[in-house]
Length: 563
Image 1: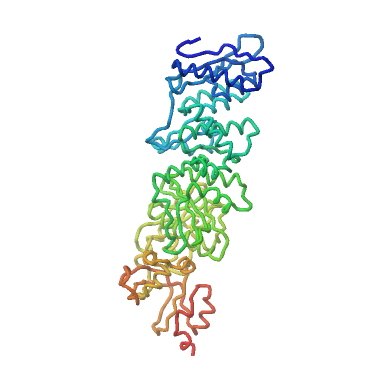
Image 2: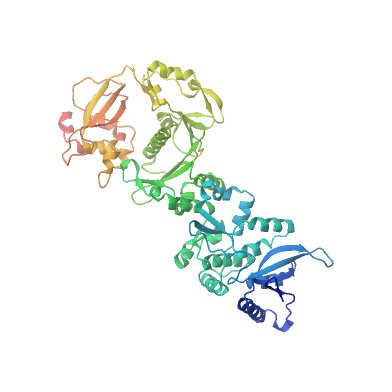
């Protein structure tokens, strides 16, 4: 009977002989046709929660549970109100087809529950910056899945929370068609959960929404297949957030030459996450621990940047993250370098890159807190990172002052998270080897009156490109060689009789090259520290400094110099 412009099913009775066949579906199809013809808003019915077989019938025919109430008969049971909405007429729930001005995504029931419970796995979806960029929705199958929970109070709370999200609608015929498409490419659904997964995807597909958000590992294993056949993307919550950020800031995710070399660096993208988890988890690190660490990093896209480093064949070499924290602090929570021929020099270049990025942010300290970062203590201290309470800390000073004023900093206190107030001299070990030791430790600070010699040396554009001039390397089709550009320590050979003393500074300016005039010609492009001067036969010196990558075939005069 029509009531409030809807149809209600009071009883649906079938002889046992016809149960389990198609008769139920045909009867309901006839009722739906009448509902559509006479423009009723939908069909409602009440059914006991403990009638398992009946619940399957309603769910399989497009009904979904909207509320529960206590039964009036004997026993403690709940009565569930089921609803089928006529998509061609105004319904109790507004039909939803996505917001054309936002990136639309359907969330599965586990994502919904995690959002309700403020679980860290879905924290990425709640960022303030996403409010104007994404629209999350659910399907009617969500309510069917929520009904499976044993506790009535939990079911009611979950339905109330689900009501905050718009629900996508789909024509029954289109839904059935899309469901068959998905069932044809996915394995046979055995469990009720498997069947709901297919129906969730089918509703999403029917509504022309291209994103489905889930943490279901089994379902995600078919993500590539579903994307290829249906054009629909399946993302984990953190992958979806990265996908949104990639869409909004596309240029920031394009690979760029790392230090002007043939090695590239780019922000981690949504499609990189699974590979990164496999490649960079330490063998003594729990998988769940690293997953949480990476998930938290990539989710905080406005405060944290995660970078991947690849070689010329796109093989992953390294990964690091940088988080901007209040109080002018930068934290590196992930710092991983894969073992290989470049691992040591690559680690040096990554540390240099971290410091340069920190300088741009004008932070006062950089903390490396990744306990699985396999970088030598010696290399870290070379770049001004010193160990305190299981973390490496670098202090940054941005002034050019007298050496004495730099030394006065040693008596100051700095606040280091996890250690409290610490005297600088307790963090930075004193050195008498060079008057420039404190300048190095507090870089980019400069000592104006350091009593050290300064040498101005010309360098050909080719060598400037290979060793330190990243801008010049970007002008070259192939860039500089990583094994040279990443080296933070090099040997300079000269046959001049001029007396050279260490410690000191070397100012490099680019001289004229044999090819077309370069953008660096006649300019000072680098200043380096001179740590040591050694005299001897070129052949002997080469043997001693072989590790510094000097290639003898590039200097034809060495043979005569040995005579």
